[in-house]
Structure formats: C-alpha cells, structure tokens
Amino acid sequence: MRKVLICGVIAGAAAAPALAQDATLSGNITLATDYTFRGLSQTDNHPAVQGGLDASIGSFYVGTWASNVDFGFGESIELDVYGGYKFAVGPVALDVGVIGYLYPQAADDGISQGTGELDYYEGYVKGSVNPADGFTLGGAAYYSPEFTGETGDAYYVEINGAYAFGPAISVSGAYGYQSIDNVFGVFGTGGDDSYSTWNFGGTYSNWDLGFDLRYVGTSVDATDPIVIGGFTTEQKSDGRVIFSVRKAM
Image (tube, rainbow, N blue to C red; front, side):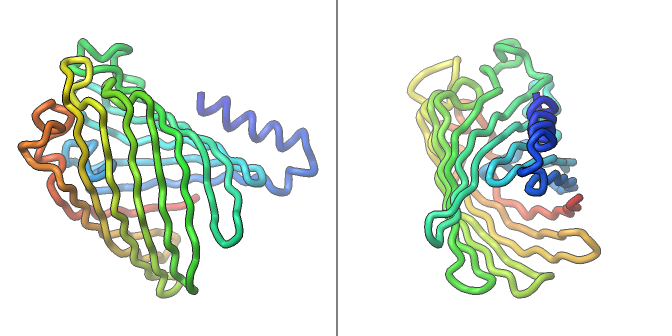
C-alpha cells in the first residue's frame, strides 16, 4: 500500500512538468532506547529501530513510517501510512490529514491474540505559529471512530512548543490528553478512561545527526481502567528517559 501511494505521487509529478520542481522525497532512520506513543511504551521498555519515507508535491504529502513493537501478542512491526495537506491561514501553519496504524503480523480479528483488531486510523488537524525568532508554539487534535483493539471512539489533543537556540541546540516539550471509549475492547464494557501525557527534552544536531534526550511521563496508575482492562501496564506507562539518534536522508 505504501509503495502504491508513494509511486503514484512520483509518477504524477513526472507527468506534470509544472509541478515537478515542487516534488520532494526524503527519508529518516532512528535508533531509540524505547518507543513510546502518547506516553505508553510500544516496545515493552526495549529499544526501537525506526525509519520513514515521505513524498510531497506542493502542499500535498504522503508518507510511511515503521518501527518494531512488542505488545506481547506476537506482532513485531508497526507500519504507519499517512497523507495530508499543509496550508497557512494568516500566521498559522495548518496540517490536515489521515493516518493509518497497521500491524501486518497481527491476526485479522485479534481475538486469538487476546485483543481486538489492532489496525486503526485517525484523522488529524495540527497548527503552529512562530511568535518569535526560534520559537514555535503548536497544537494538534486526533480522532478515531474505532481505536486500536476495538476500543471504540477515541481522541487525543496536545499543545507543544519548541525553542531553537541556534542551528545545533533546541529544546521542546508537549502536554497531551488521551480519551478512549472502552479500554476493555471486545472483552467487556464500561471501560471508558482517559489520561494525560507529557514530554520535554533537548536535541543536539551535528554531523548530519540529531541526538535527543527526553523525559516522557503519564498520569496512568495501577487503579486506572486502562491498566485493569489490559490495554497497557503500569510499567509501560511509568515515567522514563529516552535517548535517540536520528539520521535524515
């Protein structure tokens, strides 16, 4: 699926000379001590190898990104496929799109693995402004009508900010709120839950590499339905420091 999307964009650019000069293709690879998604470890507190590929023509873009994961159900790969449109309204930069989270090695129904269907998609809107040189302030909202594990509708909202002291050193952070309709999924009802997550850290860029050191935390504890229902564990939601090295290509 990702190859069809990306090749289609590239082929379209070749067929339209007027747009060809706006077409770009970029990639990245990352090594990290853990992969957390909205504060929750996706690799059972173990290291991750990740990589992505993006293609754009003008304001439109498509891309794919992959990482190893470990939920304890036999799956080992997460593959994300996304596409969207970027534009500006006055000083506000906006990004509207859709992203699909796919787990190719998971069972189609997930029941045999002790969970519901893991694959899901979200629509999103992101916005950012630059109130001062080097300073970016942003926000984002995501919504899924059927979240991972067949846990019903879910939404996530976030505010974030970053400040660059120069081309080599920057700091950034974010605060988010995740709400899930039923964390028990196909195995029960009445498991609506929500939690907060946050992260802050710094990035040093040199030698064409980005070195990031970041603290990630959540409000999840052992008494939350999200833990009782088996959606995650207290250990996977504990605060942690993550170090990563990223190479853009």
